[in-house]
Image (cartoon, rainbow, N blue to C red; front, side, top):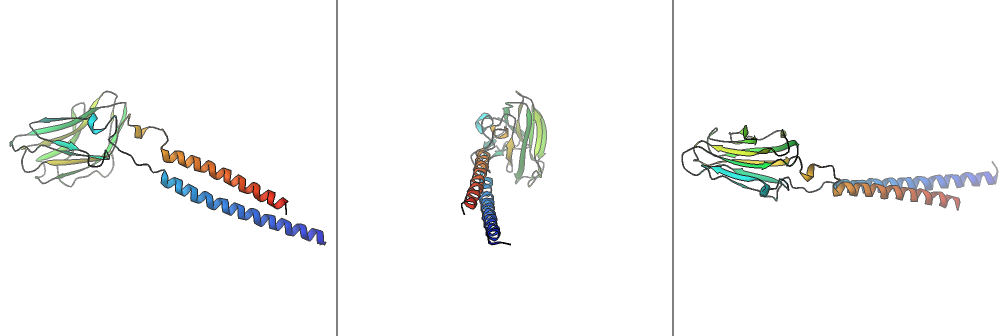
Amino acid sequence: MNKKTSQEVRKQRKTANRSAKVVRRAALVMCCALALAALASQPARADFITPYSLSDFTLTNTNADGTVMTPDGGLSIVFTGGNNGSGEPGFTTLVTTAAASGLVQFQFSYFSFDLPGNDGSGYLVNNVFTPLADTSGTASSSPISFNVTAGEIFGFEMTTVDNEFEPGVLTVTDFSAPGDPSTTSTPEPGSALLVLTAAFVVGFCRRCALSGVLGGQGK
């Protein structure tokens, strides 16, 4: 092997090593950037938001003094049944109008100091009651779901057989319903960030690769 050929081989090896470093550097940047973007893509969200914010529901008591509140800005609602001391049955409804046709989903947990069966909870679709729980400590292990059509009335109901010995309390979380902005296909801010990050990484890799090639040609 003559001297000129040996120098060319060494130059090719240096260029290959330089290109490998560029690729490793770009891969590291890509991994870090995508990891950060993935973390940022987990948006904070409220479940009870317009058109299903708490103010969009109607609370009605029939021989009851039930209440409803959201302790966390719309992430969940706490729906408390009647306990007016009358000794008579009563019920409380919390309903709204479906903004569109589709699936309603939620998770729940139920609590009461009263004996099982004396208070209860369920959901309503056009005044048809479906029981959820009447025993303290009951909770959903998977989402509860049902279909509604636009304009239908749906929601929740609390019952009591005697309005005494403490009410039932239903907590509803992970609520979604058709027409809820959180269920549409509009990209979340984090998803947009992920796309922008990917575009940046691709451009960076191309720049690094080009720099490596030009650098190899100049030495």
